Amino acid sequence: MQTENRTLLAATHLSQLLDFVTGIGGLIVPLVLWLTQRDKVVDMDENGKAIINFRISMFLYVLLCVPLILVFGLGLLGFLVLGVLYFIFPIVNAIKASKGEAPHYPMSIKFV
Image (cartoon, rainbow, N blue to C red):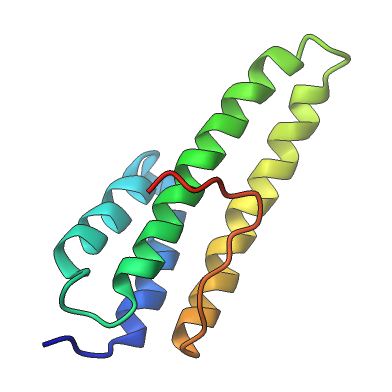
């Protein structure tokens, strides 16, 4: 039986911000929450997949920015833009999850 826990969904989105503190916790914590709670919490599977897809997509975009540094410094601009998006989207989607809305991460590629 699944229960509705919007607070946990919002916390799962916000846990991505752990990267700013720990470096890698922003991937591990949401992944563990998704894997352990996807059958127990309503909409956790949908939210967890959106988070993991966003995280993988952001990693790929960061990798693309590295060689772009050599092209007129475009990679540095890319890092700046990705950093802002990386900070804003988890907060926006945490607010959406607390209201019961579906998550949406723009620029996210579906892997999972």
